Length: 390
Image (cartoon, rainbow, N blue to C red):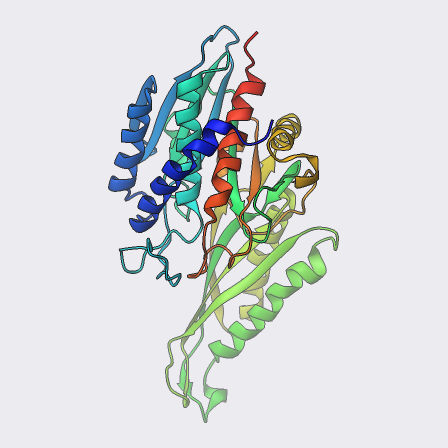
């Protein structure tokens, strides 16, 4: 079944919701307007329950089908938070808040799930229960974990969980998914190198932390080059190199490095941490300096479950046609905190085509409103196929 006629009719209304959300971006857990907007819509649709404040500022709603004898409970998730980016799209509905922008399409995800909610509340053509989770703080705040820790899965009896994310460069009307690792884990590290500052003309009297830190940066590249199976996927990147010297004739006493580690395999994630923890102090010690490593475990690998992945792909085929669904797309190295929900319950995460736009997190990124009916129809199809009325 392609895009539902009713959802095509609702398209302008859903688009208007997205534009409103886009104009008023909010960050992380600080989502008073967004949370109220979502909750008000859900109540107006006639959802049986609408609960705010789950995971600090998440919203959970319940829609029961015409029958509930199957006992099935599916959870559909959308993220609500924006990014601390200054928008550069020139849109007439661009962000009205300086330094904040929906640069990852969460306004689109929220609107899509609201559209699906309105349809499901109108029709209820399923035997079971749909739980809608509108999540805060995906962008670095682990809002999915906060909602799980706050009882999302247990309190509402969730059995399976599904979500989507728009994908620039994938044509609108297309879907992409894979079993297993779809997105990487994301850990961060901070390394503080301490030596002995001094005059740049007398390096022998100092312990040059800039030199030491540079060797650490090079040594970190050996983790991928010499410790990881070439068929594995690990990224180790130093994104910030900051010395406490701001002039040319001073050798810094301290250097701070900041970086990230991305993997698609939990075992390789553990190995990368072990090698970094060994290399950093040893490299510094070889030069007469010391180095302290602060390693912060972040989002885990987003790991799609086999049965639910096949089912999610089948539903995408119903919406878009087999030629427009990639069932074995390549994984990518950004991270997604939906991974915590997939650790709590079986489920799947799918990419929704967003067409020709700059990549997510870019100030000129644009969400394509033509993708909305496809995303709504996919959620609806999940509910009606997984929980069919007899």
